[in-house]
Image (cartoon, rainbow, N blue to C red; front, side, top):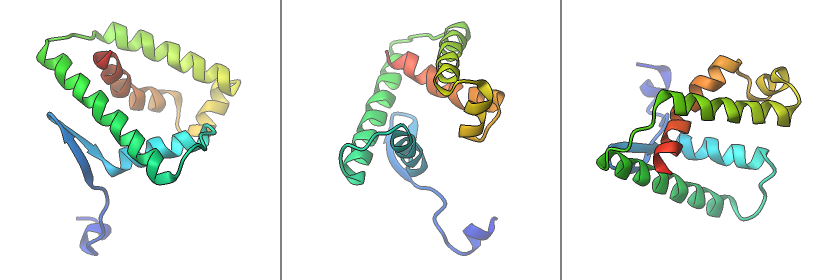
Length: 125
């Protein structure tokens, strides 16, 4: 048990369930912060978070339907798409080091974090 649990603080909470997938408040918050850091300023914080939740729910719904329809995305497809995205990020930041500094993570950590996200996005297509 952590100190936060002992004090009764909420660490994270489920905001939606789609099929077998849960969507956490922290997922929405992270996407909201990324949106703001990328220069997104249109709309109120509440409206933006609602839009993000709606998009995430739709994506999870598409993934759930893809699983029902037995859609398969191979690791080769995921890795290829992930490499393209990472290359694009590096190009936008100017270097791998700048990207790592911005995210506060190493390249392998970034890839690990993005792997499941990319797989879900490919399944949802």
